[in-house]
Length: 498
Image (cartoon, rainbow, N blue to C red; front, side):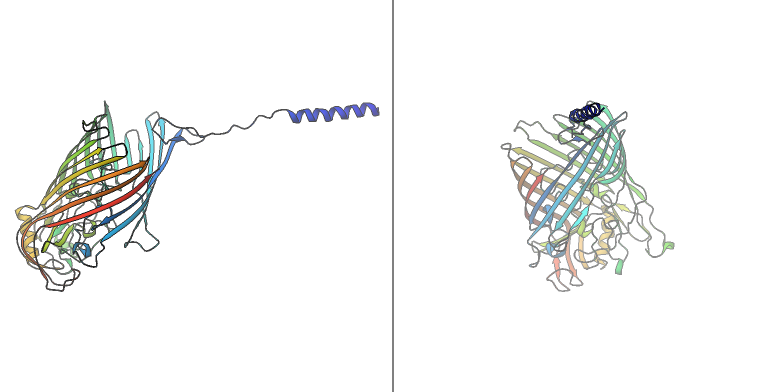
């Protein structure tokens, strides 16, 4: 018996040892897999059939004799006044991050996209803090786009112009660098042809505003310098004397596009509702002008295969707006003055307004007419070096009735900062020409330098006299001849994409 027990124990021990040496099936490991269906940078989220791309950029730049990203000194203040105590240069630093997901479904690709921007501008933020903005937030499914995306009015290359200030520095054309809330549907017709219809929230990008020129006192039309200035987008793009606030109906936008290897074609149109407020803003019994509809149209093309060299491109656009001025004078470059442009120089002053329309107490709204043309050419000297040339011209007018309303207000002292003895018209034009050279020493790192000349062409003759000290360095009662203005500026930038 002891022998049998000992043998059994030995066998049990041996059996345990052998069992311990047997291989055990490991749990499956979820490795990250590359997703090639949507271009470089995508990978499958482990455990799902959704592809994800994470990316962004660091952008650092400086502008000389201008605002960040090449925005000209046309909004009054020390820069527009050419004051000795103005900033001779401005700097800005930005970090971009984005998330892009794609999932194939029975209805096509389900896409979500979100981007966030961290910004710091010297002289605007405090020493350690900037601001955060959400530029694009949208979902695309079964041909629909829901959320904050590039306006369907704009061509495909709207955010890839060969300049440093893609939307802010370009004075002419439609820009919406932070996207517009929209509900859009796109139909694909094949062979690169598509069409889109969209309802878009017009505020603040698309509403240049209307002005009741009959108002005086604290409701006076904003003068060339000083007065109320509103941070762009913090309200409904309103300013002192601007009688438009809030949306009544969304803008209705449509386009047809052709996207081919050789380039793109784009035509678009928009309907934009224009309204004012009560003739006496504090009295609803005073009635108000009837709302009206403005509109804008655009045509644009891009050529990618040029005989001048590999990688060269030419982008051209032209647009017209009736009561829809911000489809022509786009972006945020005019934001500090909320529709007003003003600059001292050439021995005088130039100023004017970018508005959807004007009216007086008891009158209807006189809509503005605006048009623009712009071109951007880029040439690659080598794969690392490239130079672009760009030019634009944009103009706005108010017609004989609109001019009469504006002149009556300006000459009667209804400007918030002074009065004019003027004749002529409030027609205003901006001409811009510039060049940028960029160097990419290694992939995704670009250093660029840019030079720009801008001319503000106004059509008023006479003088403007201040009634206060709104213009830096000039006492009350200072008088300036009304005349055209020139501005020369430069900009540099370093950008790292990832």
